[in-house]
Length: 426
Ligand code: UD1
Image (cartoon, rainbow, N blue to C red; front, side):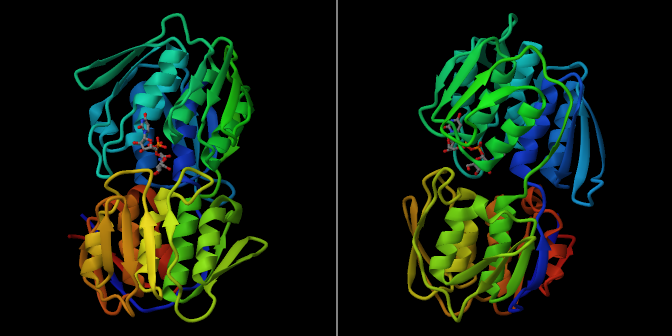
């Protein structure tokens, strides 16, 4: 298993190209199952999770051609699902990547059946799929849970329905949206997620011929059509990668231009960063981020569904607060057990106390390098950020989590002056 060796203390200077969004690309790939005519996706990031989704689509009978994106950004995927050879998403793939459950809606909507392994336990708490199943049941699917698998059937196709989500779920909204695109009649999704990735999925489905209104608001209306056609769609920039590198620049006291980034998609995080003393300036190609002057101030933050502060930036923001002046309270409202980076940051000298869903961070002058262990995707990158700012050497072990969601992270940071190398072992 690879690890990263980081010698901290070098401010980042330069530019970082922002990749296509993993969390937009995964549902878009699943949407490729909805049409017999193929789907071309541009600006797809080259990541382990994308490879897992490609493998899953392959198991279901789709073919995937992957080549460098002609625009020079990421990969271009041509997904062709003329017919299904299987309706099963096996445990071995689903356990590696929870987003595999996104094939459920498309399989039932177009193929009338699906057998998808339950994702099971996950490092960041119990993450059920009840809302995904509720939406499909409202649309007329029969669902059984058998031997760790979701068995869904809709032999006569899905029917439009009113689906009122009791809580906001990104994945359940995406599954419902894809299923509704091919259902008979109108579907209304209430309390739908409003993330930019939902808007991107709706834009792609619309380009494929779906009839969707209201994506990006909490009420989405879908008029089902009988089939979808080929479309070509460009994946949006990754707002979590954007926020992560913005925090890296701020934490190291550097000055970096994030090229291709969309500041609007991280508006809540940007406002918090500005409160802490980070300056963000729009440029023609994205935006520049720098620490305005001296030490940052501690600022409280609470994670919320979009447009609130994203849970996927919580660990990185906590790393930033470890050396801020005063105290900061970070409250996690989306996932339980998402503070696994805390003991690792403490090994580097951070002063953090966790009380239930909140963590109180009292800023220290400087972090100190240490060997640390990556636990989940965003926790891993928070340790990399801490290592960039720490005095001495940090070894981040078990970085396979990082490779699921960050493309060429050491190359992107290294190009801005970070002393970071990947080595085998750990
Ligand atoms: C997506 C993102 C993930 C991000 C999360 C929240 C992808 C591939 N992943 O995950 O990076 O951290 O949104 O922004 O886009 N829940 C239920 N029942 C369900 C579904 C969800 O109780 O059926 C709960 C979850 O346990 C969690 C909350 O709802 O507490 C939000 O989860 P959800 O928005 O569904 O996250 P994902 O779509 O899994």
